[in-house]
Image (tube, rainbow, N blue to C red; front, side):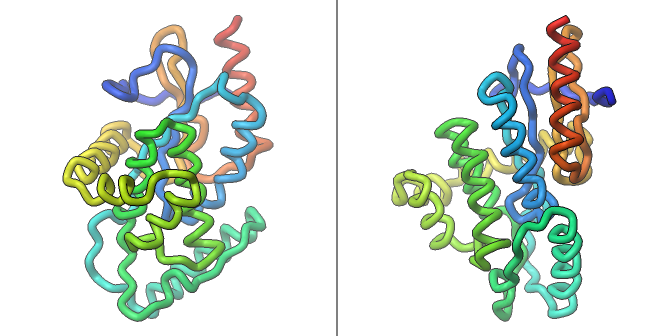
Length: 227
């Protein structure tokens, strides 16, 4: 299976000339949580020879309306499908509180701030936030929980939260959303690989795909580039 073409011309901090992956994701996207073991498979297989750039897609940023009980049940039903496909655990406590607002921006912004310590830290924070929300039932829309997660990963809590609450971090996060939109990403997870000799990027997967499908695609792609 070959990578499908994608109109993507990353610039600025996304610009890289060597083969790499761009992972459009969201810490409060259940299928992205389901995709986290696949990201682990990729890292185990290719290591730092195939870097992964994490870009926040913007699932529901800026949401202000509290969830209804019906909406919570609908979301929980999606989680059942993810669990059936991946076997990953789910705990709905994180969104069970009355008045819970499913605003994905705070957690996405936390990943963007963590990314300032490198792409590996960004990926680690993304996965940790997913585990906290989905498996541990923690509310990752809150400053306190995000600060706890940063501290767990060895990031200075006070400095992290100061950066997280800044206008600069908010703007940086919304720039990620804009990159995602310009790239034509309409769902998460989306994994893109590139560039090839012509500078073209290709879609590895739009939506969830298991590691046994994704890893061989990447191996074939790298072999073609080497040839």
